[in-house]
Amino acid sequence: MGELVSNRTVNNDKFEEKNAILLEYGRQILESDNFKQTMAHMQHGSMSVYHHSLNVARYSIAINRYFELGAIEKELIRGALLHDYFLYDWHTQHHGKLHGFYHPGIALRNAEKEYHLSKREKDIIRKHMWPLTIVPPLCREAWIVTMADKYCSLLETIRIHNRKYAQGVTMNG
Ligand SMILES: [Fe+2]
Ligand SMILES: [Fe+2]
Image (cartoon, rainbow, N blue to C red; front, side, top):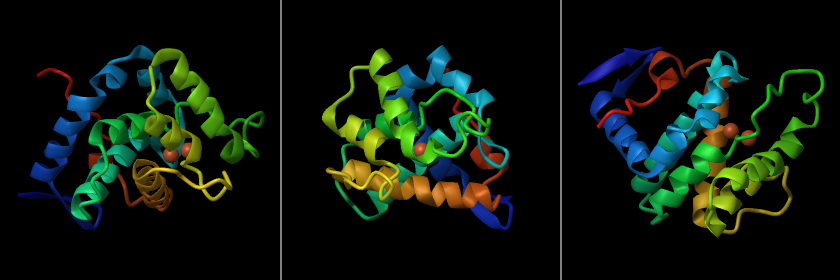
């Protein structure tokens, strides 16, 4: 069963399956007030940082499963959800130009204040802007999120991601 979104068909069952995995491993983050605050900040086009982060997590799950990469899903998802946890509007004059270079470090500092992060989760956040970070990712989880982030950013910028991908997850259950 599919729903037409833009000019592509999205499989609802697979979408909901990914949402269930997001909730299983990311509930602590998804339920936090600070994370919900990222709904107010736009990332690309009309996509908020919150929905962008959920999309990067969904695509990371898809890449890992499709290519059977064997990444640890809990760390993959937590790192993906927090990879842009910089908590400001980067479009303002103050943050604009160097945001690409600095925001992974800011996101990591913010995330470390609230969560006990594994080495892989830290590597995901710190390296997701590679090659801007120069030092490449050290684990497969960080490589997957780096690729998912670039793919989602492209789709959001050219506005192929809409409606379905601007949805959150249902928290009850
Ligand atoms: Fe980022
Ligand atoms: Fe991102």
